[in-house]
Length: 231
Image (tube, rainbow, N blue to C red; front, side, top):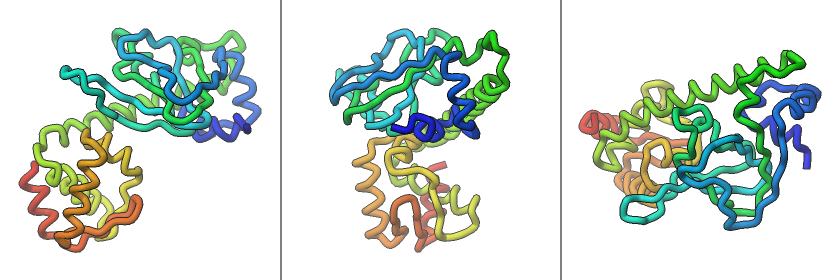
């Protein structure tokens, strides 16, 4: 396993050289754990002392509804992490649980050591802090966007608004979402199966067609109408 190559997939280590990762690793009190499928590695309400970075395998984030039903709220793959937001929040506890979905290797780094300048005063630590702030700012921006979609009641309305916003931003009827279906469902705060069914229905109605993260809009007027109704 090439840990340097795997860590470079993570946003905290964006633009890091191998030698910089190697130098800062000890400062971060990093350690690596291997888990089998089904292992719970984080639980709602548990204190967040470390950020977990998936090096290999996969995990699932979920929350428990008041009814007791578990709801999938996102998948984690190599390069993804958990605890990076909660570790700096008010009560510093996990807001969702994380369970290993496929045998995984996870790197843990101490939350405190990221924001605390190391005794060596190494410049790569400053770069890590800047990347951390960038990640947090990106998450805040995502949350602000999420709030717009939470107000929309219908599934079709949520999807139409997202696609129409992308159409306006990209200026073409062939748009690229920039994220996969799981990430799209998380962004819209909906279940992936329900979202996929509605996208298929929109394709059958001649509004869109799609392949991976590429969406082709066949009826801009109808998409605009749906998006405007959803506002």
